[in-house]
Length: 228
Image (cartoon, rainbow, N blue to C red; front, side, top):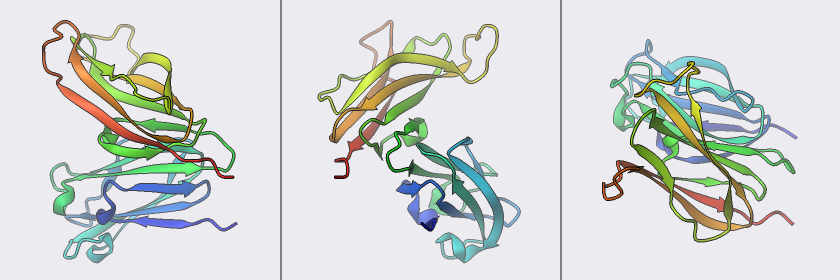
């Protein structure tokens, strides 16, 4: 079986992409100068690895008139679902309507193998496809000592099920986290049966229930019918 090569440009911002283990992914994004490229917002060990990165003529990015294009090659090395987020190497200098930020949701499958699908706040208001039996982990930003906490809105169906309570995962591991330190809170789910559902979270004041939420997070989840 031959590996596929999937190419994304600026026109694919926000797109959902399906890959198989072994496939190659090429991302071409416009930049203000050949000296300035794009960088990953985070790494994806065991799932997606960078193989090469270089500059190309501007037209290759899918944005006519772009001064230059930054091209990144990836290899799909393991199953999972990830938010592929890239930011311009020079904040605020992203060429065109991208505004220095590019996002795509990548699902990497291997037949018959359940996978872990990870979503961060980069995936807010997006959609994700997970197979029956897959694990879905949603990590949301919060702050140590804040009165605000993430709250999962009640689920109206049993397409996915919460399988563990939220677990705080500090980005750093100090002996004692100081108030104001950023950290993540994680919510774990399992896909139970085919269908579509919405997971919605509100960042609410835990002390004052009447205070309006500071922000929200929402993701559409589809569990397809298993192949016969």
